[in-house]
Image (tube, rainbow, N blue to C red):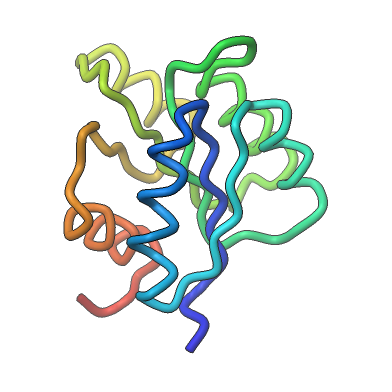
Length: 123
């Protein structure tokens, strides 16, 4: 059963892999990108129910990617992930249009719970 399409944009391969390992068995279709540029290219080619973006990436950071995505599709659900959890980052992410915020490292259960919250799916 397809619960939705998710795009994971994170420069750390381990995060991409762990998101796929957690979400695919739950019924999600998951694409992954290793940079903001690559993520935006995938985003422009497909429709996603949710985009997960790492805050700190080389080149284009997560806020830049978020703003780009929201400019193209204001209704797009986006969640920011980061290991640099500060009030400023949370405020900047939410004010830039993120639906939620996920602190790294996160457990598979927390990832699934947040995604279901954002997508309005039953827990």
